[in-house]
Amino acid sequence: MTATPTAKLLLLGSGELGREFVISAKRLGAYVIACDSYAGAPAMQLADAHEIFSMLDGAALSAAIDKHKPDFVVPEIEAIRTETLKEYEGRGQKVVPSARAALMTMNRDRIREVAAVELGVPTSKYLYAETLEEMRAAVITVGMPCVVKPVMSSSGKGQSTVKTAEDIDKAWHYAVAGMRGDRQRVIVEAFIAFDYEITLLTIRTRDGVIFCEPIGHRQERGDYQESWQPTDMSAKALRAAQDMAKAVVDNLGGYGLFGVEFFVVGDDVIFSELSPRPHDTGMVTLISQNLTEFDLHARAILGLPIPSITQNGAAASAVILADRDAEEFAITGLDTALLPQQQGIDIDVRIFGKPTTRAYRRMGVALALARNGNTDDARAAARAAAARVKIQYRD
Image (tube, rainbow, N blue to C red; front, top):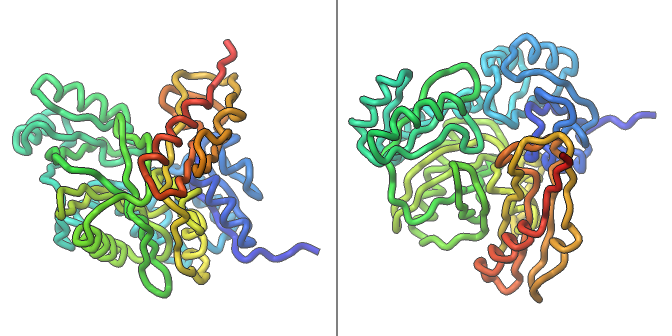
């Protein structure tokens, strides 16, 4: 006899976030089909079945939905043929959190319009450009320094800061090279001299909206390098962030976890971006909370109860990066990375199982939990553990 799964999930995108989500979903009895554009993707290695196709191929996406007839379609990446998702949702297919949310957040311009125009949420000054000439004009209007990003990308790809007129052309070409999908459009944002930036993991459930403790993070090249939880912020700023996050996720609808990013200047909070899925900076929850962001996403999707979210202590994550393109390599150093270097600090490491490397590609993450409640200690321990993990390339 074969046990009936609690639900069948079609996961669109099978990177490291998808991998952890598969673990959480399967612990709850779900059957998961992991989809990505290449074989051996991290989530595929753990899923019940897999499909290989481009998420931007509407016909292939339709074929996968028709073949597997999932209870839920669960996007893990931005670059998806959202028109196809909307079509299927119209026929009764459940899309997480909704086809509209996938469409709005797939493109930075659309979610920005929802936040700034529909909801009146504070954002930076911004303009869009679809040509180099338009971008030159936008930079002049917005002013320098400013940040240029493709309207559709991930992990900071194509993002740069324009400080002088000489940077404009370079920023345009870098953004175009880093774009995902088939829209050649950038957003030019005024640079905000923020004190710090946070991710507020916001879970929309059938019983209401709940939040995790705010997560601080540091970026390089527009991509996260380390994150920590909790991060210190005033009660006024936290309330403002929670109110804004609730307004945006309620507007998008559906159930699941959203990663909502904010800039913070004193008590003032400015909306930055939103992902309707687990967030890379939220990997710190693999050690910081009783329920990880992936557990929370799975429970919200399946309509299961979510008890009180409790913090285990001050925690941090630090990424493990490759520095070149390679197909033959080995991960070493785990024996020393996992060895506690300081009393009262727990260390863990997650290796993602990606089949190839490239420069700055995330291959794993080191995690640290400081039971003394000192976030700085956790950050230092996570960075040290990440540094002890080595990628040995086979020339």
